[in-house]
Image: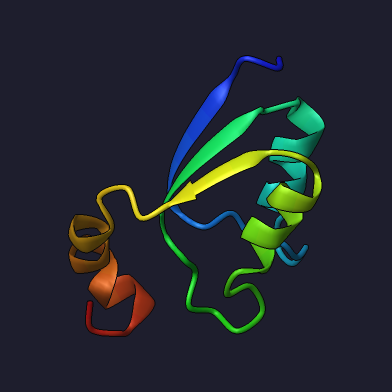
Length: 81
C-alpha cells in the first residue's frame, strides 16, 4: 500500500492501552503518508505517535485544519484551542 495516504484529526497514539497503537497499525498497513490535524496533548503520546511514524519512514504533515479541529475537540481534549 505504498501509495496510500491517511488523514487523521488527532495524532495517532503511540502506545497500547484499551486498544492497540494506532501509529503501529498505520505502519503495519504500509501507509506512506499521514496528514495530522493536531498533536495529541495526552502526555502518554504528545508527539510520540508522529515520531514513531517518522522513524518508520512515513511522511507526516501536522496542522491541516488544526484550528478547526482544536475548536471541535476542545471539550473532549479538555483544553482551549
